[in-house]
Image (cartoon, rainbow, N blue to C red; front, side, top):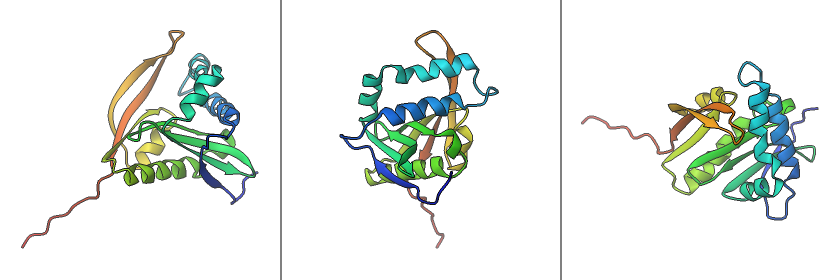
Length: 169
């Protein structure tokens, strides 16, 4: 199933977003019950229920898509350029470096745009990845979905400014 032929590209205006919405739903459905209940996962997937609205959001900011064997296997978005707004990897490709590569690409875009600090609102599923990539916890927050279901996530940030060292005379 896995190949070394993973490539990444920006979502282009003529690209079909339907495969990304399907990937989004599959990624959430695969989240461990210990992190989110079936009710919470269902509420979370409702963002993609309105395909036109979800498509419009995917086309904002910068969305990077990972492909293998011609199929989308992950995507991540900066929107605005200071916020990693989405990061989703197909269940069969999780823990193979796809999410890490997507975040690193978004960090590069942010640096190119002179962003000093990158922020994300990490799900409990993506929290370990963001911690490994040097993001620091700011606070936990509760999100209430349209149907009244609560989900927890962690606001995190990472400085993109180069470390400066001072030398003593």
